[in-house]
Amino acid sequence: MRIHCKLLASLLCLGGVLILYLFLGNAEEEPHVKGTPKANALQATSGHGRARPPTPGHFRAMQDHKAQRHRKMKNKKMSEMKAKGPSLREQELKKRPTMPEEWMHLAVVTCGDRLEETVTMLKSAILFSRKRITFHIFAEDSLKTEFESKFKEWPSAASRKYEYNIYPITFSVGNAEEWKKLFKPCAAQRLFLPMILKDVDSLLYVDTDVLFLRPLDDIWAFLHQFNDTQLAAMAPEHEIPKIGWYSRFARHPFYGTTGVNSGVMLMNLTRIRKTQFKNNMIPAGLTWEEMLHPLYQKYKNYITWGDQDLLNIIFYFNPENLYVFPCQWNYRPDHCMYGSNCKSAEDDGVSVLHGNRGVYHDDKQPAFKAFYEVIRDYPFEDNLFQSMYYPLQTKFLESVHTLCGRIPQVFLKQIEKTMKRIYERRVIVHVGPRVRD
Picture 1 (cartoon, rainbow, N blue to C red):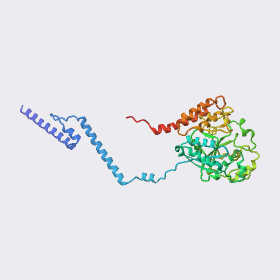
Picture 2: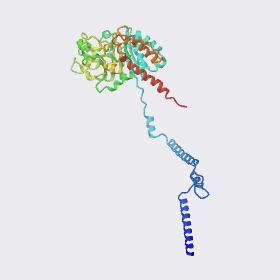
Picture 3: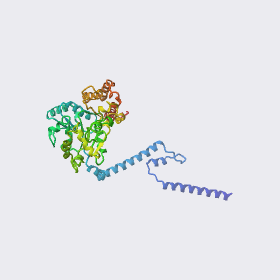
Picture 4: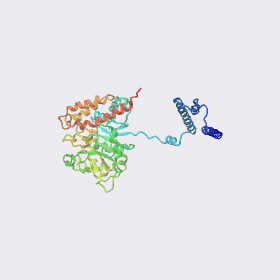
């Protein structure tokens, strides 16, 4: 019996020593600093020696402690970066020159009674375009003061979107009076733009009777689609050879199967100035300036449409130099008065309206006249939908009995898209989403 008691006592002592050893060993492996959230949690024990589970307050204290350490480390890094100065990438970005703003260039030639028509065209370019525009206006001396007076009437918001230069009518080769009377008054001036505007790389030339129904930026973008040889862009004179003028009546060479119309002509002037053009006058190539007068002398008894015919002859011999854009970019009465024959306008709507044949000023094509009058009378700062689009729809109701008026969706589709984009850009983007309180 004594032996069993002694053995039990020994086992109890040995168990106590082992428990003490384990307790002291764990304490050495996990030292805790007095006052920290973890130490405080472990020190909070019950009367039986068992640690109480940490409370939510202890967890918050631990998270606050970690966040404080993170902020200190972040502030330390930022201080070190400031002390070292800007990084190499930041220094490179500061040294890198800023790209200058791209300006578009728009040229027009005005003589006689075309002042109002020209100002309305320029107004349509300003209303919808995104980039700023430089106007190059070639006009008779008597019109210069009138142009300046018209521009002064435009509000300052519109004036910030453009600058203008007014040039006299000049012809660098041949007889000036002969060139001036070639077709419409002064129309041949466009042929001499590469020689006159020597500091301009590219420009869009348009007749006075053109209206933009979407941003000029969109047709300007065709410049980036030119291949290595192309230096100008125009639309076909007609889509159907059997009713096209050139394919039926021309007595001189012309481009393609229906010729091209020069009322809307996009030009890379730098390439035009550098190119040697093939011709049927001499075996060697000629520069643009060298070619114009001899070409006119050779064909002057065979051409009907003046400078446009000369351009058709030039690109007949140099087809690789011409980019042809769809008819929606030069939409004329010929595209609807014989039935709708401009597929791209049916799909996307009219982008650039060309009211040749004097249709803005008579009642033969009221669909064209409606656009001219509404844009001419539109006050710059009014709501586009209320003061332009709705009056336009009303005027179209009066033209549904005409061939062109029967297809209002072709005329109105693109300008409606344009107005919606302008609304989104001015209102939604600038105002931004509503912030909740």
